[in-house]
Amino acid sequence: MQKVGVAVLGLEVPHAHIHLVPLQGEGDINFSNPKLKFSPEQFNEIAQKIKQCL
Image (cartoon, rainbow, N blue to C red; front, side, top):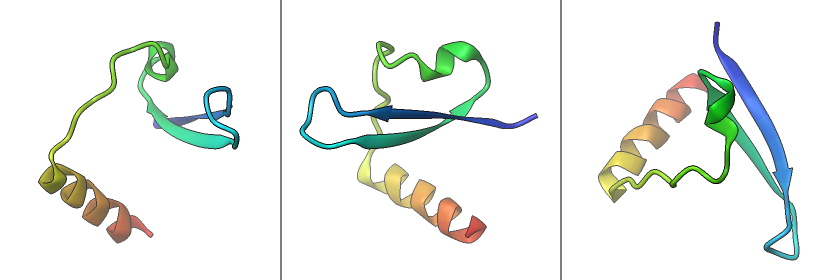
C-alpha cells in the first residue's frame, strides 16, 4: 500500500511550506533525518517521472 504523509511547516520561515512525503514507515516523515542530496541530473529524472504521472 502506498501512503503519503502531509506536514505543514513554517517555523523557520515567514510563510508556510506544505510537504508531501512518500511513506514506507512512520519514520519517513521525521524531519530530523538527514536530507537526501541529488545531482541536477537526478532532479531532472525525478521531475520527468512526476510529469508523466500528471
